[in-house]
Image 1: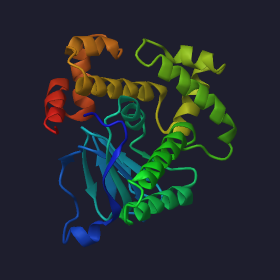
Image 2 (image 1 turned 120 degrees about the horizontal axis):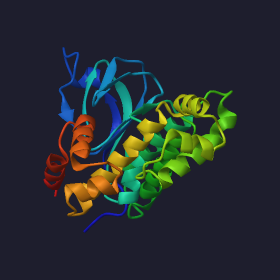
Image 3 (image 1 turned 30 degrees about the horizontal axis):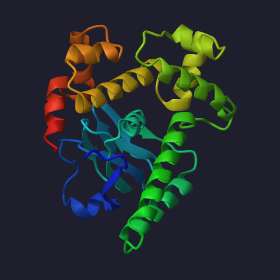
Image 4 (image 1 turned 180 degrees about the vertical axis):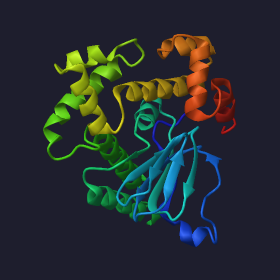
Length: 266
């Protein structure tokens, strides 16, 4: 039976120094769950797909199913690993940046620690408190990352512009919309909007749309039996070959390999 609520698989405090003795780099591995980590101390580097990010205190790292990752130590964090099968939630989690600086790190940390406390206490309410705190935390994280991640105080007044642009891109994510059309929608010049969006989210508009399309494709691969060319066209790719090329570059495997690998979890 398909789960509509996300399920906690593991959470707690992780300190690589206690787990890996005389090791400076963790093994390369494929992510199978959503791995949400709040960094507690400055560390080495984390590598997700083809991107590399310095490990900085109070930053959030989000690993997504299908990604390849490894870490240059040291690394210490609060972590939450969840399984999600609801397509709408998965699409929101997939659209999160791999790494971002939250606007209120103490609040994020307090929410994670509260969730850990609720999860480790005796279950007297059928898991209702844990489920409620988990959903509240994910909602906070998604809202923070999409609308205000990376904004400076001076740029904070532009958050509504970014919100309108994101809503427009979400609505037309699988259509052939251009940067000019997105900028016109929020009444800004093409170059100014591009730079503003990059500063606010840490991604270009093109990158944001690509991540949304890949996220949609992953959901269709896992939840439908549609052919690859149908999925390619539905997700805004001009051809199946181009879809295969982009998907492999992003996730390190072909769409067919991804579909087969995800099916092995059941």
